[in-house]
Amino acid sequence: MREKTKENILFIAWATSIIATFGSLYFSEIRELIPCTLCWYQRIVMYPFTIILGIAVVKKDFQISLYSMILSGIGILISAYHYSLQKLTFLQDSAPSCGSVPCTGEYINWLGFITIPFLALTAFIIIFICSLIIWKNTKGN
Image (cartoon, rainbow, N blue to C red; front, side, top):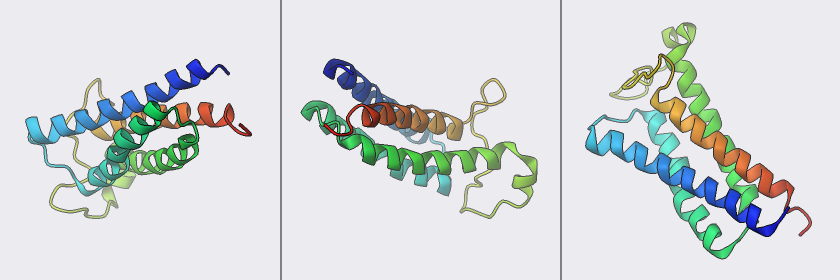
């Protein structure tokens, strides 16, 4: 794979983290929606990507792909669980209390399936796929 292609893929991962970070800040700071506990966990995983991947883009450091793949995998698990709590009735009934804001609440529900955890899940998947592509094409270099 050409070096420029890997740079572009790394940039896509970084841009995704920037959009996700600003999106979550928009919902909490502008729309004044209070994040639940699982939303905070997703933020804890997503926000460092803006710095880590930003530095990797500037330095053209493709070795970051392994670490970003692992972290985004953790984010995928958290987001998928959170989205399942919102959309699967049998999980909602047994959902643990997660603070003053219930994790089963849906502040947005665009098109009947797009919620905030779904948006986070999408961002984590994009970062994971970008990281996987870079990792596969950087091994041994």
